[in-house]
Length: 75
Image (cartoon, rainbow, N blue to C red; front, top):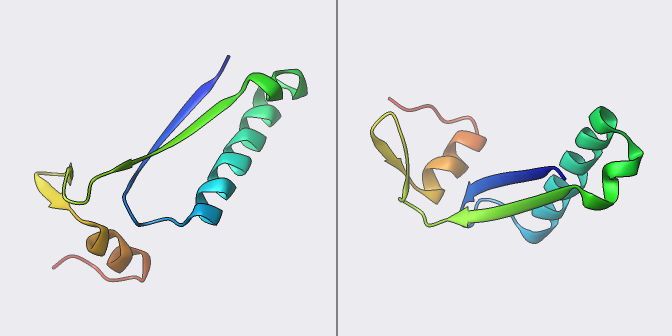
């Protein structure tokens, strides 16, 4: 039984976006493993507290991720 775990910073995705993540990742797995495993493919979207996620030694906040999504770059 496949389990896909997705971690995002809190507040970066709304309920509809998280539902889309679940649907689209399930569809991707079904394409790989076959339709018979759809009913046992799990997708879990977990939120990590803003600032508790770090990349390359830099803590990231919800605001950082939203700026990246808009195309801002780190200087």
